[in-house]
Length: 201
Image 1: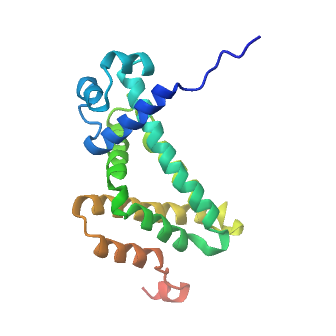
Image 2: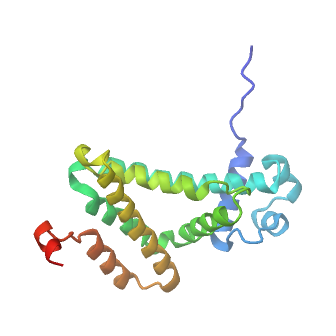
Image 3: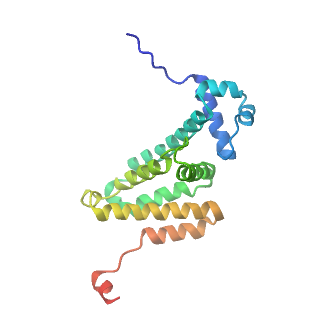
């Protein structure tokens, strides 16, 4: 029996890339097929044919954004040996997040993240939860095996992720890269008080 599955058409792939560039410039809020189609040299009818519905197109766009994110994570896994630890991994991630070239992608990511919380039944369903898992997974690879699978290990990488996410929101709001980068590095390398000092507090 012949295999009936087919790869995405070249035209679908081309239009997806053009639409992805469009939403990186304009966002997902109030996305309308007509101006999108006019901008990328297509028509609403063609987009509906290729993606099934507007929600189908949005899902494809979010998958494309996640594909770019996962590419970064694969690079980090390759470049960050476990002994280097979470501070080094956090610095590499922050260097990428704070690069002005990635601002439009990250605004799109933040919008989809928020929408997945406000409207969990929409095309961005579970986007927020999935991206948290993705980032925790790559941070885990930067931890020694003795720490990785412990409750403290999970808490440590969750704290690093919280620092990076909070700093990213601040950066997108203010653009103050030097101030926020200094704070990120300070927090990534902060040390807990020793037991004897903690007992005195």
